[in-house]
Image (cartoon, rainbow, N blue to C red; front, side, top):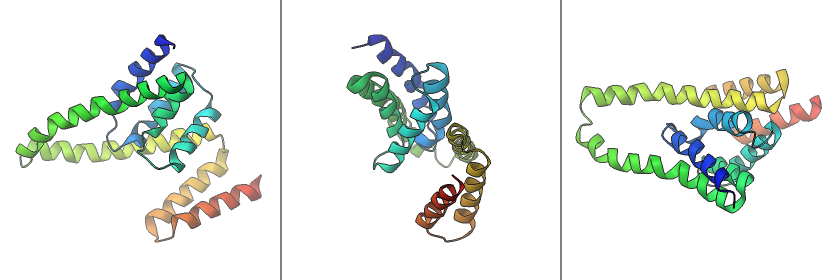
Length: 174
């Protein structure tokens, strides 16, 4: 067992646990930065493979962290990364839930809730940009992502149809 790697996983993912406002997707950009850029645990392509695997499997959005831990240090790495991403924020939420419900009508609490919404949206947008840059799909990837976003935001089109059209575009472009 590589204790240093387990310590690195804990040091990276425990602080990110507190930033996962809006779910695991909101910290994707920093997971990529840490795993690929800072620690060099994997390449962009390997990160995208793990990201894709985490998206197609059932479970929490933070499953990517478990997969990164597995990639870095096997079973114990997966366990350390999972504990680091889930336990700190769970303990914090458990502690704050009582306080939050007791003072929920206070202006400060409403202001915090209103302020966190655009922050979470921005973090999810940053995650999307991180995935598009790592995918190296160029203009085609950005165009398909933009058109897919518009189609899903402004119409009632089935997301499976959007996925099929995106795959067809890249099949024809390659």
